[in-house]
Image (cartoon, rainbow, N blue to C red; front, side, top):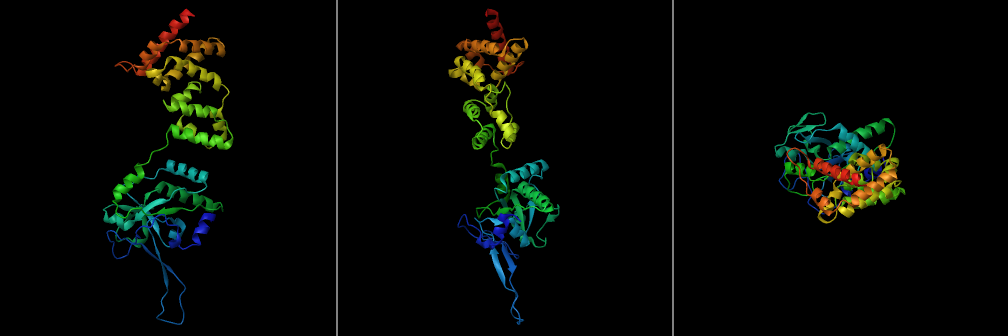
Length: 370
């Protein structure tokens, strides 16, 4: 049993830390009220002897809005969990990602949002248990069934991971649940918003993560800071391409680098950084003002590095090829830069292909005059 789990189990569930002083919510076996919905849980106390009239004492525990409850304690009390049929199916690829996340963080970092099964049934929603069996108002122990609204992949990942840890004789991870922090909600709306009103990390978010990780690990951040700064006025793909041989770094690459020091060191490597920056700085002298947006399009660095590689194949030294391209970019001129920045796709060509054709034409003219 994990340290977190054992510590939480020592305290009765009604002593969990309260985040809001909100209305208590209970579920009674007989009926469900519109606003004051109570979930009453009874745990057996020691049976008093020598008296037929003395009954077993119970200790009442209330699932309360604003409190977080440990999964292990609820399971020991006899609670089980189900799902809404219209919710997305369990994806094993997502499960693997969630397991990796739990291991990386050494535990669950956010609780599962649940509502009593009876509330969902009153809303006309079809429910099922972990085995795919329907949950109805006639289901036994309905008062002890909670429906996962947000976190079903994390809960399944935790279940699979803990099963594996048990077999290996290792400490398991604790899970946590909480009720909606509002007392008047529509379950379908709650389900939709809980699962869609989040923004997955984009390239800039992962770049920020790489910067933080590099600082923590003592890895150079010079190149990463430059890429982030240039990405503010363009795309992170273009910013990476300027200092990565014309190649972008995908989000997948950045995700892997966030947990793999060797990959992060490769991304942050500054061996050719100073020379690569010269190409950007040369282009910036021509693409300025209204045409500066082209610097944030990956088509430009991709074209430049393609030319660089071609010149080197033609047995020109890299330093000479770099100098040639720097001279070309600096002498491109305002009018040509403006023309390129204003290009739009035609019925027969994409915008990128039109830009490439123009750059090829200008570079051929430049080379003929050198």
